[in-house]
Image (cartoon, rainbow, N blue to C red; front, side):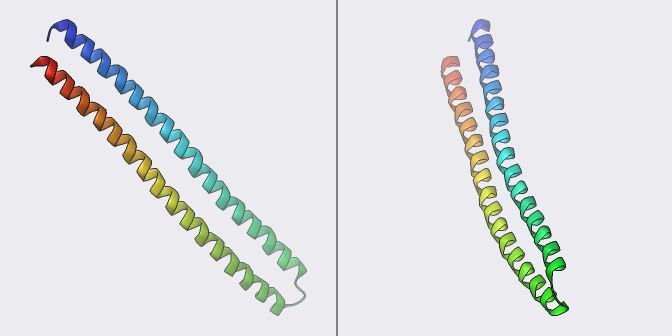
Length: 122
């Protein structure tokens, strides 16, 4: 390979590297948005439960009614939090798969470029 060929190959690799970094940035942003949405959902759940707890405290006619309502509220909150945990675990698996696919695509491109450049050099 001549110096001109080497320079062109380096330029192409730099351009492709920048494209890969841009795609990683896009992937990170998309994932961050999804994770932030999930966190907001959990925060909304906690706020809703707090409002309901205050309502129960103010409307209970006696100690037994108050305790019974608190138990029901705690049961419902734990069930909903378990749903959130399952959803978040599913999201974590999706994120893992997306990062894995990104890395595999990058390695495939790199391997193809190396084979192409090795064939030119030979």
